Image 1: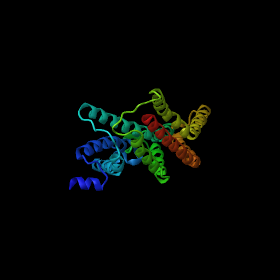
Image 2 (image 1 turned 60 degrees about the horizontal axis):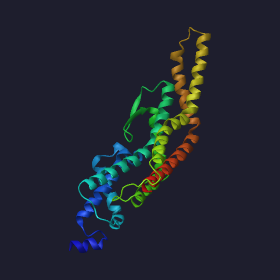
Image 3 (image 1 turned 90 degrees about the horizontal axis):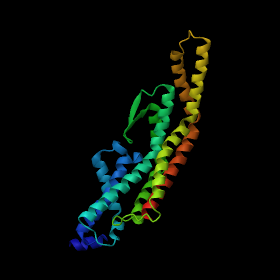
Length: 271
C-alpha cells in the first residue's frame, strides 16, 4: 500500500532515502528564512520558518523524485548536510547585503544630522539603526516585494537544486577565485552604495555646518550649536524628500543587481 502511494505521487520508493534527501533540502532552505530580510528575517517566529522550509521541501518533491544515485550515510551524508547549510547561508548573506547598505545610508544621514542616538531595531536584519536607516531599509523591502522581486528570488533559489543537486558537491570548474572575488566585491559595495544613496543629504548637511561655522565666526555670541540642530534636522528631511524619486529608482536598480549577483553565485556553485 505504501509503495503504491509513493508511486502515485511520483516519489522515490525508499522512504528512508526520501527523508534523508528532504533533510538536505531543508538545510539549504532554512538559512534563507533567517538571513533574508524580505522573507521576514527574525520577525517571523521560529515555527513559521520551520513550516515554510518544510513547504519548500514539499514544493521540490518533483525535483527530488528525479534525483538519481544512492543517498550516502554516515560521514559523507554529514558532509552533504554541511554543504547545504553553507549554500543556504551564502545565498541568504548575498541577498541581505543590499538591504544593509540601505540601512547604512540612512544611518549616515542621521549621523550628519546629529540624531543618530535615537535608534530602533530592524528585526529583519537583526541590526540596530537610526530612524532614517529604518525608513530606508523598510522602504527598500516594501518596494522589492511590490515589484515581485521575491518571486524572482525564489525562482532562482529553486533552480539552484537543478544546477547543484543536493547529492553532489560543487565542482567549481572555474576555480574558487571568481566566487571569492565576487563575495569580497559585494561586501565592499555595501559601503559604496550607502555613500551614494546618502550623498545628497550628507553634502547638504555638510554645507549647512559650514554656513553655521561662518555665522559663529562672525557672531560668536550666538549659540550656534543650539540653533543649528533643528535646522540640520529640517535640511536632512528636506533633501531626503527632494531626492525621493531618485532613491526609489536606485532601490529598483540595486535590488535587480542583487538578483543578478545571486544567479551568478548559483552558477558558480553549479558549474
